[in-house]
Image (cartoon, rainbow, N blue to C red; front, side):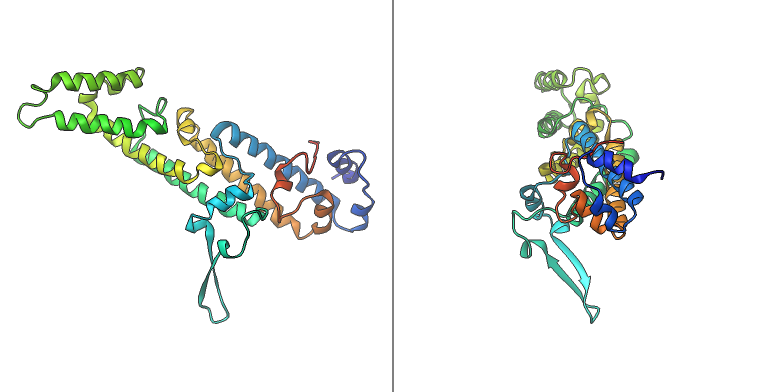
Length: 279
């Protein structure tokens, strides 16, 4: 890299005294690339907020709520006797303690796992989701109720002969909610297809509730057909954080001078706390 000091000056702002950075003896070119990675992480965060509702910059309060999930709260390691010892974050941290980069990586890994599993399910068993462009979390139980009512109205031997007026009423309510989903109307003829879709949406609802504290709007993601993109951006964000950790061993002092602390993820995301300029 040509003249990393000049580039670093622009990233940190013209008024920053670079003397301590130079005196550290650490590679300034690596610091520049690492700070650029921080800027990419901030850009990735903005995409996730706008397209999926997910905000990776978890507050201590939000992270503390995620500790109700065993996969976030518990970690395991082997002791000297090679026995597995389980640790609980609830027992070692206070609710207002800053969220560390290790904590965030754990959350992103689990969220990525859930969304990737959902995407695999979608591709293998639900390649065509006729209701997805119009579905929302509050409609899942409502549509499930419509399907169950129609099943009960289908009397063995006579079908809807004696209950047709009730069935038509349900179909009209369903059509009012999904007027543009023409391939699933009338509902009586497509009960099996709709019921299969509902199984997928129930799984979506479970994941959405599980990760609600992150801001995830999974049904919004499905409406925009952005599930794969969301997963890709989560992966890029995780890779960016891993790169920061990997590079940190060589630039510990200068990262601290720049305001980046692995013990508090707000230093990665908060442009007011750690202002950085794209160069």
